[in-house]
Image 1 (cartoon, rainbow, N blue to C red):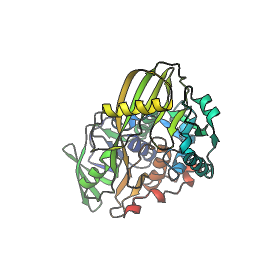
Image 2: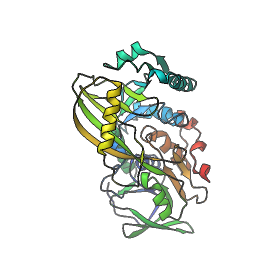
Image 3: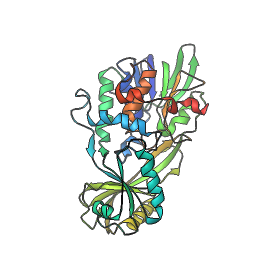
Image 4: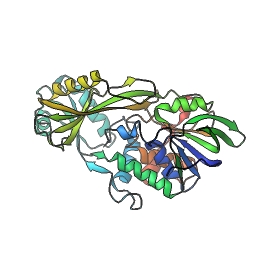
Length: 376
């Protein structure tokens, strides 16, 4: 899908991770689209390093409509998009210590009121779901509707669909600058100039820098480092172990294969945009927090990695036209929910840029809470 730069294009999407690729797939049948990616590989920084789960309550109540509206496409994709589903079932537990019962109660009540199938459970059921759990972890909210996401397959399907409908992709092609013209933008990309009617900023951790290069005021997208480790354990923890999330945000972990887990200390270390790498101290914190929850000996740290999660100031995704420069479109600040919300965000934003309005649950989502105008 690598292409030379054309002289002109309708929509130039900056960034070919999940945000840019999903939008390209949704928009390519209706507009001439080109993706430009600064790295050698699309999805290098955040998409390719995701812990990869769909969790309806993750990201909070404002994000939940995007997540639930995206579920059907991820679970039952159109045959010409994918021959198989992108989701594999996995339940979830939001857990707390005995002293955190009130927080777990509030979590369960808030999302039950929004129609989420969440059930308050106690110590006996927690022990049944988490072998070796320590006695103090006696509070939990159980969600059956949680799934793993095959992120690689989903990202590849978006790129494949975009290519099929005529979208172009250039790698090793960073946006250097852009100058506003009477009918769009003259954009310098990799030493060449391309004219674009619209620029879409899907640059993730680099989103504010891309805006500045285009003379557009940033909205405050801030990148944070997130660490994940794969542990081999000295006990036979099942691969289907639920996703376990701390109600206070100190960790999450889930089964990866028999006797192995993926674990994160849920760290959010402010960093400059860069190729993130895990810090030993964060790996140690993750293991310490895990062993405070369960009596599992750690046999080995088999893998460790870090990625960049990017948030707007209110921690809600940002997509839509810039209020001061309507030919500059934001699609950024998706934090840790960008993959599980990508079908809805792509369809809603594509409709603003020339595609037909989406139907079904996605069409029922109000895009206004996600508009960049909230920062005007």
